[in-house]
Length: 393
Ligand SMILES: Cc1cc2nc3c(=O)[nH]c(=O)nc-3n(C[C@H](O)[C@H](O)[C@H](O)COP(=O)(O)OP(=O)(O)OC[C@H]3O[C@@H](n4cnc5c(N)ncnc54)[C@H](O)[C@@H]3O)c2cc1C
Image (cartoon, rainbow, N blue to C red; front, side):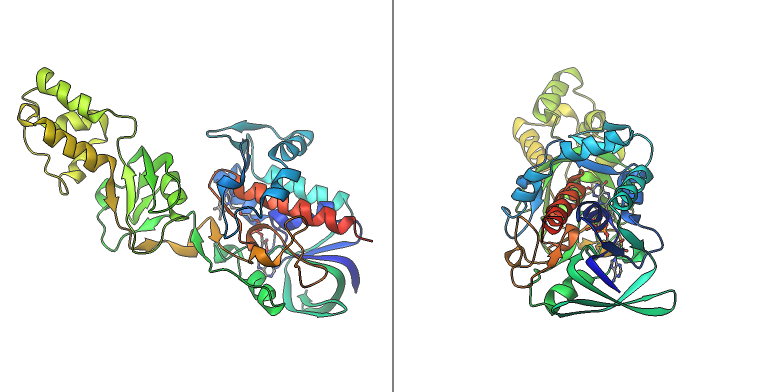
């Protein structure tokens, strides 16, 4: 069987590329349903983009690589498409756009767009082997039968390694290496932190706004969530993308609280109250109990000197925790790293050394922050590759 374009992976990037890649496109995927990650994303409502997207929201060895594709397919282009399909959406926080109804609306929209463009979709199809002799020759196994597909263009959109249970494999990296392209180190990102002891079990369920940062990278003003296994919540997921094993995470537990003012005032208004009682007015009381194991919070307000108050303010605004690790690919929202952008064209996503071979979406070493950035990269990189293929002679 011969096609003009074969797309491996019917996830966010693969489906969107199929809608733009012109005639004679076949999309194959081993999953039972297309766009499974979209379906579960954003708690079932899909945070499909962010109103404020720029290169600063991404991690990559070459931070400039993503700029061209992101500039040519913007959040407003995708919002226009979503609105044209009558899918209602809302901004939740920090520019993050979610479906009002269900993430399934986005999956249905993408499948419809691909079908409207004439693309064929083969699910439950195993990719056995990829070769290239003039054209790409891909061996597939479908319904118990071996099928060979020849294609002029091969788009690899099989994503990263996160959530293997949902069908994630490292296939994109294998194909890249097979064709002589470099792959950067990969690891789980946007993932909860774990600790060797169960120190956070007693405070599990507590959530509070914090300002958190790893040793490198920006500070994130988002929520922290304590869990039985460790620390999670948007702030920790964001920090995990910048964290290196063995490092401490710096957490400001009081980013919006003037602790100095609170405790100094309490010295005159509540001199006989314990400092822990005053702290429990501004922080969750179970967290205050937990902190007494780490810090000396004994004594009444009247006993606390300015110096002691200042030391506590510093300690709580730079709370240092050293995770043992992360929950890994089992729960990670994305894979950090991927196909080295040095080997790809930033305008078309085509491999510089292999004519007709494209990598898009999460498979590429472009990893977004939490907040709709990863889907925007999937749409933008897929659009770049798709339109380039459609325009080829
Ligand atoms: C729980 C969760 C929630 C998320 N929520 C959001 C969110 O709200 N907003 C956001 O921007 N991002 C979110 N993300 C990240 C986002 O889902 C991914 O960045 C995005 O799906 C990447 O798109 P992709 O097409 O490159 O890869 P994928 O969507 O992962 O698609 C890859 C496809 O390739 C197929 N495949 C893989 N290996 C093979 C193989 N060997 N043979 C055949 N087929 C194969 C898979 O079955 C899959 O269909 C979330 C991720 C997770 C895990």
